[in-house]
Image 1 (spheres, rainbow, N blue to C red):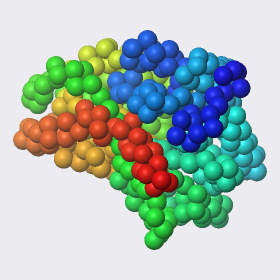
Image 2: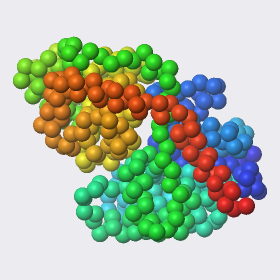
Image 3: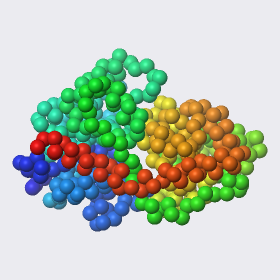
Amino acid sequence: MDETGLKSNSNQTSPIYYAAVAGDILGTYERWRQGQRDERQIAATYSGQFFDLCVRLGRQGAASFPSNAKQWVSDGSFVIRSRSPVQKVRGVLFYLDQLRRAVWLSVDVLRTGANDVFVMDGITFFFMLAPLAWTGRRIVLSVHTVLWREGVFPSRMQRLTRKLDAWFLRKYCAGCLVASPTIANQLRSMVGYSYLPIVLFYPLYQQADFERFSPPVATSRPFRIFFAGRIERDKGVFDLLESTRKLVEAGRDVHLDFCGDGTQLANLLDTVEKGNLQGRVSLQGHLDRVALLDLLDQAHIVVVPTRSDFPEGLNQVVIEAILARRPVITSEICPALELVRPAAVEAEADNVESYRRAIERLIDDPELYAKLVQGGNTLRTQFFDPARAWTAKACEMIKAKKNADT
């Protein structure tokens, strides 16, 4: 093996390829090969689970990830390369960028010699992977984000790309790993009566991280509200701040913690100061895993107020709230809601008043609060189960295809 990649002549021993849509894959790999977890995330990283998959099957691995810096590692077991990130362009340039990424990915797969290829959604249009499939590669999509918003009428170009993606799914896709039932249903609607293996996976957590959590006393004050994620307008941070401001004005004893950083952090701080909410709202910035869990331990509820113009994937904060025995408030925008409904209050997306009322319900109704906590207790075990996680489901997908080929 050299810088160009990993080579094998056998489909059963050829490398497995993983195309990540985001993340510091090299950083995760350095920790993984030293037997360490990536402490930057609470859940097991999907790249780390890919490395586990290769070890489980006794095969080499190749991976790519977006980065502004040119990076690569090649150590005999894995080849990991960076690729240029998504260009923020519109119109014709947007579609050319999709094609550019598909061509780069296809060339990289071919030079590694991989036959089983896992591609996360968001890298390129699905149908642009068809030429790669024509070379005999088995392409499995790992879909973490809903493919479209229900009730939103697609443009002409969106309808065309959806038809082309459906053609690829019917003719050339080896299967799909999906993060939520909504995604599975959308894929089934695209392929119609054609057969497409679709397997649901769950995010994976270590139970030890959540053993210390017990439900807070619902009547204790201040009533603490927790947000973790990117500080961006489309993540709903200003909506949540406005809901909190209304609660404070109504005499409610509440405290809101924002955890994370982003382009709107300074604007959010300015809005807090102008509203004289410094004693009621704290901007914690980016926190490591331990500090984040410490703050979550103080919370009464977790709110995920993502706006409808953001293409939300499986927001893991929703899952982490349940594991920490905290009720969650979110909207249908978050696919994770389907997995935690017994422990959640659903609000209306983009509606400040709806989120305010949902928070107020949990403040005023300890019985409802206790019911949601109990509902979460019935859900927790599945998110600690490796048999339900990405590695196990990807392994099932490969073995099922191998059995079909023999």
